[in-house]
Length: 59
Image (cartoon, rainbow, N blue to C red; front, side, top):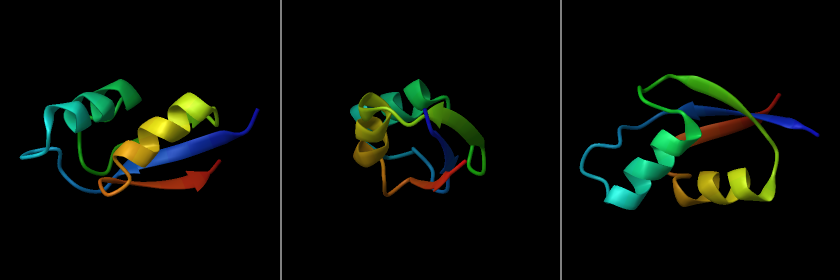
């Protein structure tokens, strides 16, 4: 299955609790941190929920 790279570009401070938890579930803690995930519907849904805080690219 394809991989997707997710980079945090904005802070989770002053965001709703569900968005903070979504960032944490994706494995993101700091701005500029990059994680790699499988391109599954669950991961894509999580990315869509915090799309204003992260950037993505195909790996």
